[in-house]
View: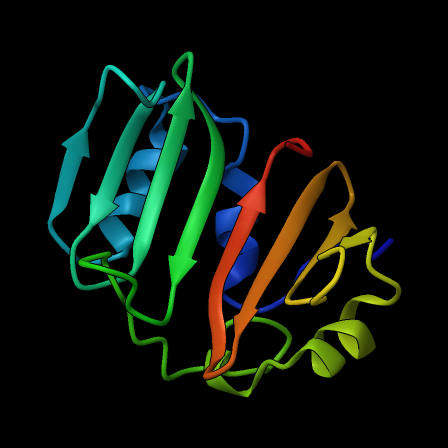
Length: 147
């Protein structure tokens, strides 16, 4: 288990568990520098803040921030971001591979059953999840709890 995240992603990890009305989530949202669309759907619980063009989504369940998604490769019409600066421990998102994630965070808590295309690591009382596809890093998710 890694003890903490470093790099710009650490600020996002610190706001997991904050309330939707609290100042921390709003400040990070403001710092993201993109228009935010609030989305709700009857079939998918919670409230989602979607930062168009940033590949960033905040997910709130019962008004608590429980997940943050960073999307790097387009899937259908999904919101994709370009994080060209270091995001985690000096690593730029396109350079993160399963092997680099393992060397940075240690042994994964869980991996994809057959393909090992995803890895989840425990970071204190949170989790970080990497989803890899043939063309590279697809998505990083910060989670308050293991799904």
